[in-house]
Length: 105
Image (cartoon, rainbow, N blue to C red):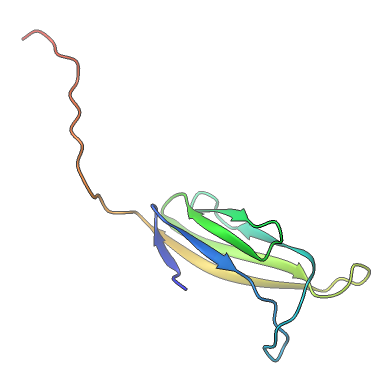
């Protein structure tokens, strides 16, 4: 998965809970997503919490964190995952010339 995108891009993110041996696992409830810098990355999270779109909102770096419950409702066990995304300014692709209001010379 790319960890660098431009200010004109967004990237889909998915989470997969794993056991200590790397086997698929499940979570109790819906995982919570956060962006350390919403001026760089904003998130649109799916209703089940297992995926999101990371939308570039400015240049810089943001750490995406997902926290979930690997235990039960009565005895929660928090697990987290992080991903660092870097956003660079999109390069100019064209030039627009705009005429102002004419004035007497």
